[in-house]
Structures are given as C-alpha cells and as structure tokens.
Length: 147
Image (cartoon, rainbow, N blue to C red):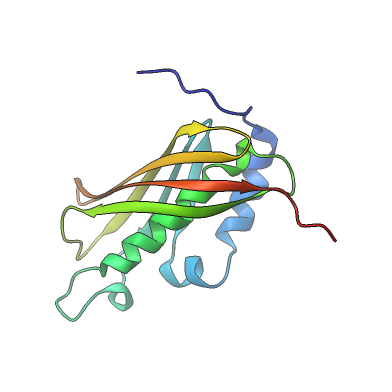
C-alpha cells in the first residue's frame, strides 16, 4: 500500500466526535447511521436496513446510500482537522453495485489524500457479505466563520 500523507490524527477528539455525531438529528438520525470506529484516516459506520428506507420494489433507495456516503465522507476527516474547522463536500461519485433489501449496511471510509485545505475520500459499503456501493469524493476544509 502506498503511504498516505495527511495532517496529524488527534485521538483525543475521537470519542467526543463520535458521541456528538451519533446524537445528531436530521438526516443521520432518520437514516439510523452510527459511527462505530475511527482511526487514523479511517472510519466505519453502519445503518440498519429499515422499511422506511426502501423503495416500492423493496430495495434501499440509491439516495439513502448516497446520503450515507456524503455523511461519512466528511466525518472521517474531523480527527485530522483543527478545532472549529468543518468539512464541506464539493463533489462525489457513487457506483451502486448491488441491491440492498435487508440486514445492515456497513460503510468503510478511507482518506486517500488530505491537505490543510482539501481531502479526497474513498467509501465502500457492504451488505450481506457483498460490496453494494463504492464512492469517492472531495471535501473542502473550511476554517471557522468569523463571529
């Protein structure tokens, strides 16, 4: 594997970030998306396949997988960022590879490259022992807004 260069990982913020993220309301709460672990340059999250997330055909809507990718795309960066900064998705591309209709979806996000201003992240999602989604995106690292 090619070594990755990125800003320092701050393990002291992982627990508070995970706790805060897992208490989020809005879309992450609706999706039931929970971060399970964070380590340097990597994140694992999961969500249960709930009936409210399925299409009339009984498969998880691609927009659900896209929203989950967008969320973890930014979250994986926070332990490498300075306090007060935030990650803003500028683009991502997704391949929906297999239908999802039951069980749990597990997302694995990995930082491919990160500077003080941008990060490129790869996400793979699995369900029932198979790859169901692959994505890659870019976030812009934003400094705190002036008060």
